[in-house]
Structure formats: structure tokens, C-alpha cells
Length: 73
Image (cartoon, rainbow, N blue to C red; front, side):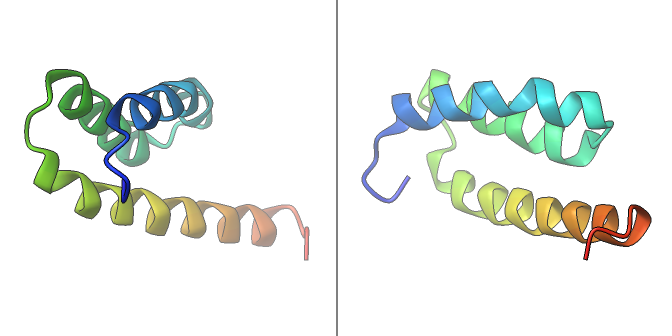
């Protein structure tokens, strides 16, 4: 994102969506879908950093919850 390599970002985001969807993390999936759409359409690019922050925060929370639920720590 920082280097404005939107096509590469879109490809990576696209790869994440099925796994996040499988986990049932709809909030993360929805943000990833928005990012992919914005990159593909070259629109709302200023919104992407906030969406990426949300995804990062929510994935961190998800991992923490897995650690708790499955005694991984």
C-alpha cells in the first residue's frame, strides 16, 4: 500500500478472503472485499489504510481468541 502497488495488494487480499470466510470472520471478510473492490476499481484509495488497520486489529483479536480457546500459549 505504501508503495502504491495496488495490483499486488489486490492479489494478496484476494488470497486471504477464502480463509477468513472459512473462519466465519465476516467483519474481516467484508473489509477485505471492500479493499479488493477499491483496488480493482481504482476508487476510494484513501479509505484503504483505515480498512487495513481494521483488518489488522481484527485479525490480532481473532488470533488472541484462538490462543485462549485452544490453549495455544
